[in-house]
Image 1 (cartoon, one colour):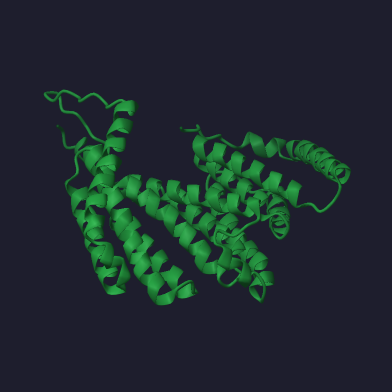
Image 2 (cartoon, one colour):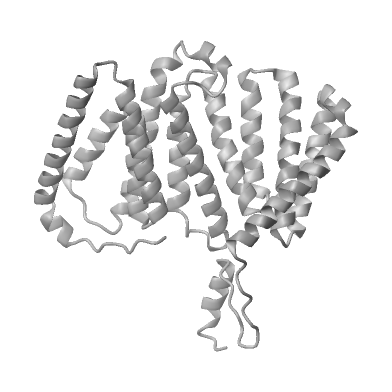
Length: 355
């Protein structure tokens, strides 16, 4: 090993990329169906273990203090088990134990605060802490997903649930744009990004259905938050697009049509926020060359367009004509942009997509 190659090997090791020495045989990768069977075995073992514990701890749920204490103890035990886990069975067993501990902690807070907004903010803080400290990528992804749902529920108590998806999209963009900023935490950042991405898709599905996650939220759908939420969501989307454009302009020249497109997207977000969010996710995937983000961005865009179609309180003929006009205008806009950006495209070096 020479002095010139030492920094590169150290940086690869810090990034979590294993290097096999010449005298060490590379271990074969475990097939996906074997890992799936191990995960199922872990959850099955966890169900039997938790059922055995539950038979002797039925009185715990009647006391908020006992429920809180047992829940924290189970979360700590899951943390210790995850640090010592070297197989998928133990990892998923620890994940199940952690979930039960989180449910006990949440139940203790429910008995204290019932369904007020004070319940969801501590749950959001708990999920954020678990996403940061738990030594498991699966657990971190789940905690990021649960944090997005807790944020939605906390904001829904003030009729600001529409802004929750915008805030999740902002956090999602920050994580993926800074994916390689901290080499030692690349996989953790990816885990948080995937968890938030799933949470964003779930929130868009909730908006598509048109019903809140909990029935109690219907009583909070009126008030000041009803008209503040769309504007707050637009402001958050503007900040997200600004961060995305800042990343794009580092490698590509600026053009006036980009700012016109951003203004059009922000105007659309006041009426069809789900469509704009899908476009932003798709643009984020294109900017960082991530195929999965591109595909899920297209899926999010299709869900948003479908929601807009069903939200229109008009006849089927008017809906069909509206979609026809939007489609024709989109093709015309594409033709105009291709003509005006022909010189601009010549200066762009496209980035190779990655899976």
